[in-house]
Image (cartoon, rainbow, N blue to C red; front, side, top):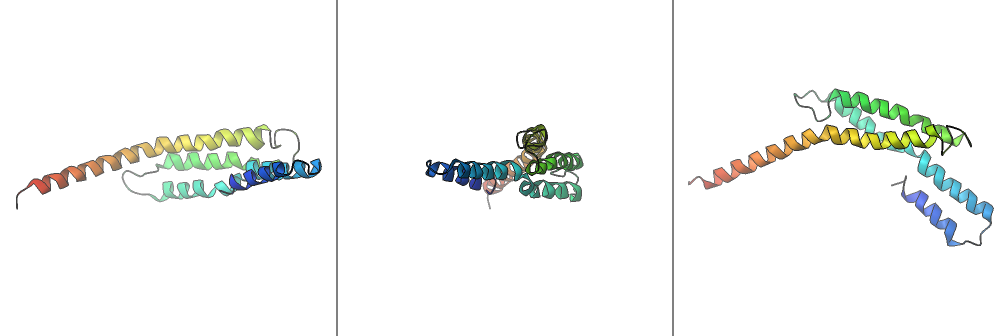
Length: 145
C-alpha cells in the first residue's frame, strides 16, 4: 500500500493548489516519484518468504521447487541497485535509468510470471484433490445406510 497510496496522495497534494510556489510543487512531485520508484525494498519481504518456502519444503511435490528459490534470489539481487536512485540525478542509476527503473520494472513483472509458472501445477493438484474429495463425498452420500 505504501508503494502506491502515498505517492498518489503526494501527487494529489500538488494539484490541490495549483497556485502554490512551483518549487514546492517540484519538491512534492520528487517526493512522490522517489517513494514510488525507490520503495522497492519494502516489497522484498514477499520474495524472501518465498525463498524460505522453496528451501524448507521437503515434501515430494513442493509448492515452490528449489529452482524457484534460486530464481527469486536472483530477482531480489537485480532489484537492489534500484536503491541507488536516491544518489544519482542522471545516468543508469537515476530514477529513469536502466538500473533505477527499467531493470527493476522488468524483474518485478518477471517475478510474478515465474510465480504463475510455479504455482499453476500446485493449483491444479489442489483442484484435482478437491474434485476427488467431492466425488468421494457424493458417492458416500449415495450409499444407503
